[in-house]
Image (cartoon, rainbow, N blue to C red):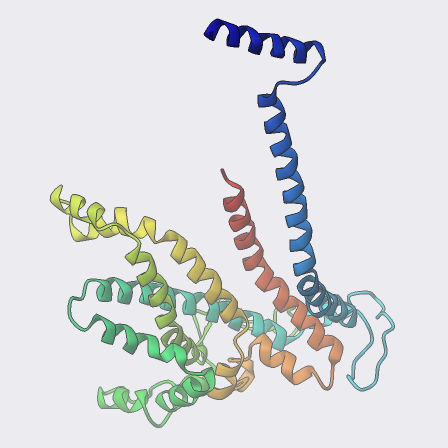
Length: 350
C-alpha cells in the first residue's frame, strides 16, 4: 500500500516537472518576498506622506529663512523699514566691515572665552557632583533636587541674583575686604584683560586685547552654576547604566577608587560627555538674556556677545545684524554638524 502511494506521488511530481512548474517550496519564498517588498514600499510612502508637512514647514521656516538672512547680509538693506534688496558692492562688503569693527572682535573674544570656561566648569562640575551623589546612600534624591533646581530658573532670575553677588560694593567684594584685600576688582565694570596677548595700536587691524576679560568671569560663574545641574543629570543617567558587577570585580582585584573611575567609569560616560558638551556648547554660543540681565555690553564691550550685537543693530543696520547672525550660525554649525555626522555613522554601523 505504501509503495503504491510513493509511486503515485512520484508520478505527480514528474508530471508537474514535465509541465515546467516550479516546486511549491520555491514559489512560496518568492511570493513572500514580493509581498514583503510591496509592504515596505507602501510603508515608506505612508511615512513620506506623514512627514511631508513637517518637512515643508522646516524647509520654509528654517532653510528659506536662513537663505533670506544670507541674502540680506549681502545686500544694501540697512534699515528694516526701508527695503533695499540690491546687492552691495563689493559683494560681502558687510562681512569685511564687520570683521574690522572693534565691537565684533570683542564679541568673538568674549564668546570664545565664555564658551571655554563655561564648558569646563559646567561639565567637570556636573561630573564631580554626579560621582558624589551616585555614591551617597542617604538623601540622594534631596541632593539631586537641590543641585538640579537652578536649571529650572530663567537666565534673567539668575542674572539678577548674581549681579548683586558681584556688585562692586556688595557681595563678594565685602568678603574680599573682610579678608584684607583693599582694592578688589570691579567685576562687571572692570575693563582689565587677564593674560593679555597683545597691545593693539591705532592702525592695527586687530583692535582688541586678546585675553580673559575680568568682567566676563561673573557671567561665566552664573551660567555654570545654572547649567551644572543639567550636566549632573546627564552623568547620573550614564552612571546608572554602568553594571555594578564591573566595579565590584575591579574592587576585588584590588583597583583603587581612582583607577575604577579612570578605567571603568569615565570611558563608559564618554557618550554622556559628548552629548552634554554639544548641548551646552550651543547654549553658550547663543547666550543673551543672562548677559543682558547682569551687565549688558559693559564698558568697552568687555561683556558684549553676538546676541546683544544682533539685537542692537536690528533697527539701524539690518545687513550687519544679519551678517552677525550668519557668523553665529556658522560657529554653531561647526559644533553641531560633526556631532550629527558622528551620530549618523553610528546608526549605520552594523
